[in-house]
Image (cartoon, rainbow, N blue to C red; front, side, top):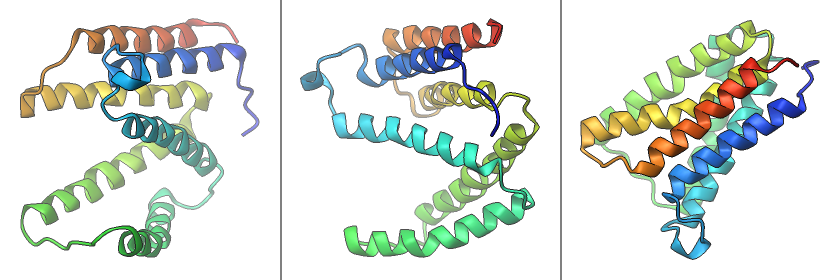
Length: 174
């Protein structure tokens, strides 16, 4: 991308990931105390995969809507094959279909278009990319108020660590 990732950018990303891990583990750093270690590891890996996808996507000169549509069309057969080989596909007509449509339109469609445009307009993609660390907190707030799930003290501490990492990166001179 012809943008240098500085040591400050890398440290800021590591600090932000530490905040995410604190939230995911609720402060229980021992591997045996983490309820679902594979889930936590997959969630962290997905952030790296998504970041890579979006960074590579910046080079795509196609119209964002066309690019997104073609990406989904190419991924659909692979996803269907994976579902057929690894699980039992279920097509639901009730609430499940509504949830799938919501995720497809809002979380995967419109959000991706906005994010892609933000990265294309950014002077420094690493600074914009680190804002992705704020999305788990927005999700936590929504889950708390909509589903009534508790927010632990480690969540607030993790949020402070993430925001601190983002601010440190943003205020630094590269």
